[in-house]
Image (cartoon, rainbow, N blue to C red; front, side, top):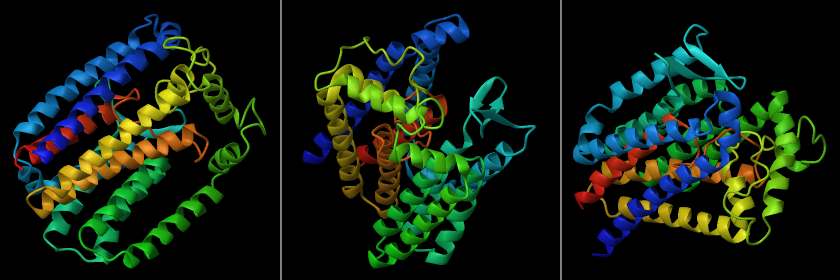
Length: 355
């Protein structure tokens, strides 16, 4: 009974986050949508379309026995590698905001790194549940998708892949001390990538001092400080954001949680963070109660990627981490992330239903 209650809480909170995201996108996107597309509800309409598609794939995934995904884990991984490679070819990859992360499929833009996250977690869960992989093989499986994603460049998604994979390795029974060395290696690699990249160094400096160049290099960080600071304890009210009027960059995606802090204040954003933490706790509880190793690992991997993605987004908004372009799960604008997340939650629902 306790497990059933925890599972119900997980899906109810996930649905509330989805609805909350639609409310926020309708709130913050009106000006940008009117200016760029002549339709103030352009972003909201698209997000509702993706949410409906996500609801369909959630329902399908909830009906299909989760062991089916274990059987096709390798072909799906190879497809994701192929898609990541296509992104880097100018003829196929679409550049948005200086990054080549998207494929244009007949007018529909798809982000292969979202599929890569899913397929990597799936494939590692399948291998680790059968104990058919050693640590060297584990690193080899991780190397290609992470390397291709870094080349886009998409540093934030690469961090999510590495974090979810290391947690899977730990959940499979590895002792903690064997996780420390590879974690330090990836941390060192991340620092190296920051040091050799001027724009990443600028983001780090913007995190350390948002006021050092508020009209250019630290503009985004500076606006985040203003947005969160203007919210105070109780916020200025739903729909009353001033920063959404073309001041705060990426207001519907990377920065949407800053508007939560502005309109609902410290109390509001703290409540959202509390609900998110409970969502993660409930998800891990489903994994712990799963009936076999694959279900336990797969659930743990999906929940870890959602948790790390949310943590990176919130930390960047709070100027605790450099800006990375990582959306907040279920809330930020974007079809690929939303649909793949809802699809993954549908698989977790199937796993929970068989407990």
